[in-house]
Length: 272
Image 1: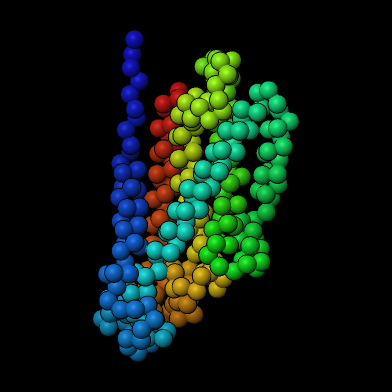
Image 2: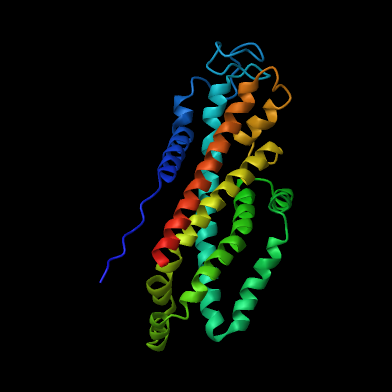
């Protein structure tokens, strides 16, 4: 009898974890490390690096301080929406997968409205929510609604074959309660795909939260989306004001996608 070993994370995944940890730590503690307030005028407009590590923006505000202050709101909002979307998506996807075995109409009733939501572009859905009720909670609600059908489809697809396995049918025959059945018999088999999907959903959440700020529909704080919008007109005079927030968002996106690919690879290896 051979024992199955858990595949090791790749070096790329370890590097991605290090990048995610570094950017997250910078965003969380950045406001305490910033030498100035994000609204304080510290010099002449568009000063080159030297008057501050990254220079000043179009109003003479310190670029480094604004970048350090701008990440916390984006990351916290993205993290909350990612967790909420994953939890709700898992609940809906597992319910649909179980229903498909004996009551296929329930599966259709649950999944068809979510499929209809997928036809709406995420940015358009975000704009609809923010037009109806501007504010952080509208951003959270919009991103959760965007993430929910995607996560539910991933979990539904992963759980479908598992519901037909002998151990699940035996649990159903024993009359196990639904929460116990889901946690004990199904969740271990969908945890890998769900985590891989959550990493991708996190990238989408960061994009949408930053997009709200970029369009001037965010919370009013100087987050990375606002910084990118402010820096665009003077990008030739002060490239660092644009490059710094863009680079941090890009690092998050690349690292999360690399981590997602590695989680999916390890999940497939364990279930093979």
